[in-house]
Length: 140
Image 1 (cartoon, one colour):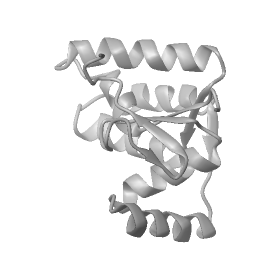
Image 2 (cartoon, rainbow, N blue to C red):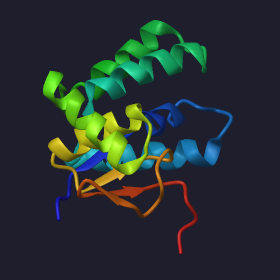
Image 3 (cartoon, rainbow, N blue to C red):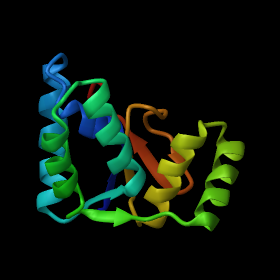
Image 4 (tube, helix red, strand yellow):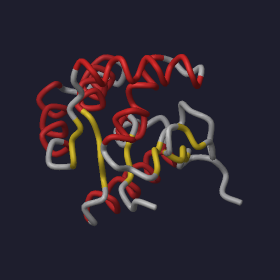
């Protein structure tokens, strides 16, 4: 199984969310660990969504958020093309997930990630060959 880990947008958003300190600590720790070891994978979609959410929802300064996006760009970045959109539609239809989550799932798959860190999909599910893990779920 691949050691690569794909990060959904919400994990990055929590790194700046002062209203959720436990999630913030966990998100920072996990991203740092995977980025330091060269195992972090994201997509251009994640970078875009993070910028919009951090500036709109968290009201962070656009220049600050841009710096973080520049740091994110040093990770393994998956760029989707037109054929990838149709493959994501297939995942959307097959797994009954939102189209946006299907794009994330497809990017994780083509990025070679064995795990997708997200709180938007079912924890423990295996979709399209990628295991979904909610890093904020209670650990057994």
